[in-house]
Image 1 (spheres, rainbow, N blue to C red):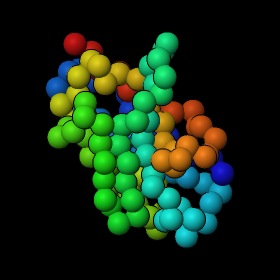
Image 2 (cartoon, rainbow, N blue to C red; image 1 turned 30 degrees about the vertical axis):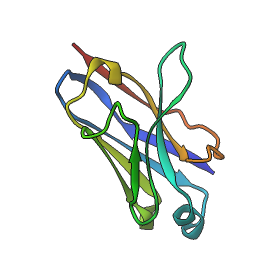
Image 3 (tube, rainbow, N blue to C red; image 1 turned 180 degrees about the vertical axis):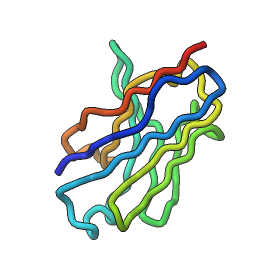
Length: 116
């Protein structure tokens, strides 16, 4: 079982980016039973929670991204997405997806860089 993140990139402050994640090696029913989440890590700091979504798209967000980021799920394809709008330099980091329980091995992440 392995999450594979994609997307991200370099954008100026105020811009938008999208990151996606596909979880391979898990059957759909297991994926659907999990709360999926996005995390962010910057060098020298612990990985932090950004957003989560249940199978029925009940969502939760870190205060720092509320109103700017939107998490969504594609349960049939075992994917999750994170639409990031009005990006700020402090949103810079590597974005990872995982179960909310963080049981999966960590993927390589997707780099998001926001310039001021």
